[in-house]
Structures are given as structure tokens and as C-alpha cells.
Length: 191
Image (cartoon, rainbow, N blue to C red; front, side, top):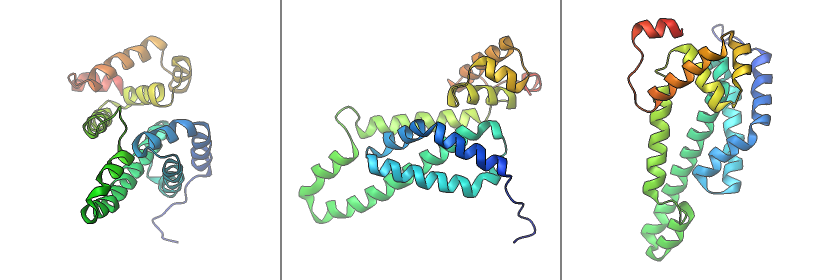
């Protein structure tokens, strides 16, 4: 074993497994919304869990476990979709009559490729802005919106008052919608 590698605490593995089992429908929904195929979504979910187990030591903030796992599911699903489209593109080039069949596999009547692309871009921008939030604000937003925790649960876990958490959520939503980032003074208050 490498001297620099420290074994992952069992507690994190247990927490990951419990979260995966408890939030399986949410995670599968993310994969299915991208892949539009039940079997592929199931495969993506299993692969994402495997990747998360192998990379659990890279997680810096245990409060962000659900968001981190959602990103792994999302990224792996997108990778599977790109791989599937590359394989399909080869058959389109050799058999132009297959174009309609291939397009119908990757889109629905409700969602055009443009719509899917816009949704993904909005999600990526939101996740990038989430990383810019001060630590307590980010943790509060992540726990409330991604982990679906109540304000009282978050208050108990973080040791903050509910009015303070409501303030974090309000300011966090403004920033995520594209509002100005907090000033350095606000960041120290939130941290």
C-alpha cells in the first residue's frame, strides 16, 4: 500500500451506502433524465456508486455528499450518452435511413436537443456558482435543496438558528440565479 494513501474511514463508506440506498430514486432520476433509458440509467447508477466508493477519500466536505454523488451520476450519465452517440453516429454515416431511428432514441417529443442542451448548461452554471458560495451558505443550500433536509434538521446539524439558515438560503438563491457574489465581509460572516 502507498505510504501517502490513507484508508477511507468506514463511516464515510457507510454514509455513502446509506445515502445511495435512501436517495436511489433521485439518483436514478438524474441518470434517466439524461439517458432516457431504464437499463442504461441503472447501469449508470451502479457505475457511479462504484466510482464514488473508489473516490470517497477525495470528498472534502461530508455535508456535500449528496451533491457530490449527484455530480458523479450526472457526469457518468453524460459520458455514457456521449459514448452512445458516437457509436450511433457511425451507423448514421453508413446507413442514412437510420437517422430517424437514432434521433428518436436520444430525444422525446417534449424535449428537443436544444432544450436538453440548455437544461444541462443551466445545471452546470448553477453547480459552478454553488462552488462560489461561502462554506456555511453552500452547506445550507446543498443540504436543503439537494439532500431535502428541513431547516430544523440543518439547524441541529450546523448549530445555526433557523432565521440565519433562511438568510443563507435567500442569499444563496440570489447568487445562484446570477446575482452578485458576496463581499469579502459577507463571506467572513457566512463562514
